[in-house]
Amino acid sequence: MNTPKPSQWLQVSDLPGPDAPRHRLAHPGRWVSGAIGLLILALLVRAFAMGQIRWDVVGQFLTARVIIVGFGWTLLISACALALGVALGLGFGIMRTAANPTLRFAAWLYVWIFRGTPVLLQLLIWFNIGLVFPRLYIPGLVDERMVDVVTPFVAAVLGLGVNEGSYLTEVVRGGIGSVDRGQIEAANTLGMTPGQTMWRIVLPQTLRLILPVLGNSAVGMLKFSSLAATIAMGEMLNAAQRIYFINGAVIELLFVCSIWYLAGTTLLSIGQFYLERHFGQSAAGAGSRRQWFKTRSRQAIASGEA
Amino acid sequence: MSLAVKAVGIRKQFGTHEVLKGLDLDVSYGEVVCILGPSGSGKSTFLRCINHLEVPDAGYVWIDGAIVGYELRTGVLHELPVGRLRAQQRQLGMVFQHFNLFAHRTVLGNVIEGPMVVRGLRRAEAEARAMELLHQVGMADRASSYPSQLSGGQKQRVAIARALAMEPRVMLFDEPTSALDPELVGEVLEVMRGLAKGGTTMIVVTHEIGFAREVADRVLVMIDGEIREMGKPEHVLSNPGDPRVRTFLSRVLS
Image 1 (tube, rainbow over the protein chains, first blue to last red):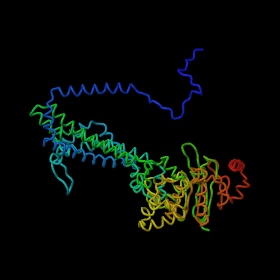
Image 2 (cartoon, rainbow over the protein chains, first blue to last red):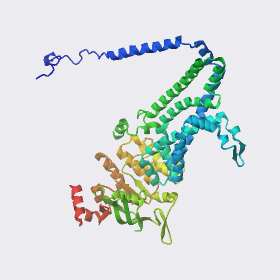
Image 3 (cartoon, chains in turn green, orange):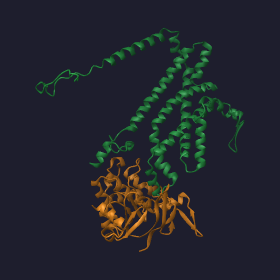
Image 4 (cartoon, helix red, strand yellow):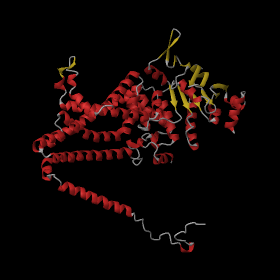
């Protein structure tokens, strides 16, 4: 018999009252790891501070006109490309679930091509699309040389937007697929056509499901817009490159860009957080439009059955 | 009484499993027909074939003047485009086992959806009629609630109002109380009893033998995809001829 001895054998007569003072567990590991983390952080900061970075140059260019204008372009490209991506994602996502096999195949092909090739490559191809289609000709509307139509800005928006759309197509398809089949059957028995069912019943429920993903897309898009620098689009990274080709302050200007990108993505993340919290809210505000999101929250069921 | 619905030789197969083996059914206006049977006997599938949520492999359903989903031209059934099929389907109000209320619409929004979008009523008109119906099912005071805030019984009563709002010729009920807690069954049956008294034509798939006995003009018992017994409830329920029906009834009645 070798059972370990309990460290303390309590007799019932020794038991304290219910309000006996208590100590919380100390968690020394957390303190040690915290200290190590701070140390590493301090060393990193010191390395950057003492490295060959002229911080005054960073500060000087942080608010330089060219950089600010470049950041403006970055925001504009991101916003336009995201809008295009969402529109394409919705359109092709709906097509992916269509009854018509031609539509389904077209959407599948779109995803296959644009999700299957690097976005940088797509940007370069859009920029040089004039080599394939020398003229853009729509009878009665447009007849121009392609190089005049597809400016670096247009190429950037098309490249980033069409690529994003291919990802969002799959997101929308998944969202539509996750709407309860019974919702569609109910709409059918009311006599609603497939179009009415899609627009009034399925899509509103899909959009709220995929909202968090769209937040993610927005953050990604802001960063991917830097790829447009490769096709001579004067967004922020391109502006920075043109400056450091002249003054040689490479790392300084890259830092300037990093700061702006971080600022942008931070703002978007905050927005995303509030958006998600808003739509993730439980039955707190009775009668709120957002109730539906937790269709089976315990509170809702309890209050309903009361 | 004139015929409202006529099912002719309905067959349905899922894979190799034959669910419905050629069913016929005539339902007259004002009649209440209850379909009973053990689970897996094909009752729900039969009901879903009647309003074309499932397309029968063979046979067809006629509702007062037209064959559901088809147009008869020189003896050949031509499949209808989806828009015309939907126009026929709205003649048959459907109440589902799992309610299927639109989760993103309020109670009122659920009831006015069909009338506004499909029948083209103006909002004020649709809302006035919807409130009458909600009053009828005892849900008028919850008009601005969302489905997630309702109990199962309340959801089902709203679902009944939503189906009635399309002014269908026939109401179909697919196990309307099977997903409900026992204490909530009564309120839904009460609403259905009211409809039956008001002369609504109803086809009800149910496990509620008591309801069938009390309300149904005709009861039919399905076993393994066939109608084994059909007739007045007092006959079928008390004195079934078919031995398998007798076994089924003795099991549910005990």
